[in-house]
Amino acid sequence: DAGVIQSPRHEVTEMGQEVTLRCKPISGHNSLFWYRQTMMRGLELLIYFNNNVPIDDSGMPEDRFSAKMPNASFSTLKIQPSEPRDSAVYFCASSGLHSRNSPLHFGNGTRLTVT
Amino acid sequence: DQQVKQNSPSLSVQEGRISILNCDYTNSMFDYFLWYKKYPAEGPTFLISISSIKDKNEDGRFTVFLNKSAKHLSLHIVPSQPGDSAVYFCAASGDGGNNRKLIWGLGTSLAVNP
Image (cartoon, rainbow over all chains, first blue to last red; front, side, top):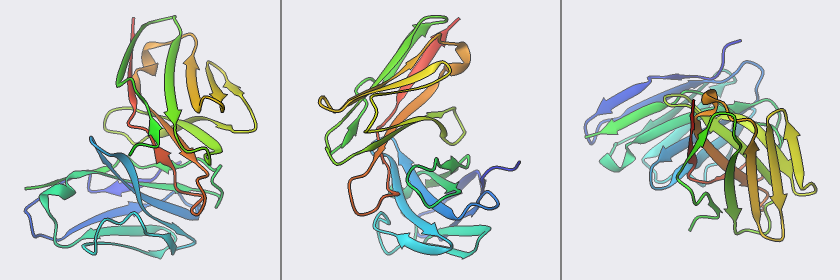
């Protein structure tokens, strides 16, 4: 049973470059979440989708961040242009029910370093 | 402004003993709480949860206690095992508006020594 799959695992890029993070949720799950983890702020919800529709993007820090979910099995988080302060671990998670009591299943994250 | 606080960044316990991880929250609107465990280079995994209508929930070696008046919850692991060594996150939901938005603590790193 494949879990949430994220790629790449590590990304190192220079300031100003475009970065695209990818996520494949667990098959059959209809809610997908993008989180960012930093030492200072911990885990922060950036955006979440239900049935491929963005429900809440209030956590997206700036217009430089955008997320899409073109179908039920794929989502991207894009940063353009990237800045050093975007360096963090980005997690994707999915859940099977649109219920706040439904646990999240996380991928192993993408560690982004912007120099 | 941390609405969910885990004041102990780390905890060290001997194998076989009890581990107690604490979590405090400030928002009285929170009514559902979860604990996740995270190993290095992996994503968090769900461990146990509790609704505010309860004061205790147990699952095997893991028990979560909720004290609503004190806005405090704790996770007890008995007996602790070396494989329990991980970072434990407390999370809360129910502050209105977006029900799927969890507010997370910064985590407590647990080391269980053989």
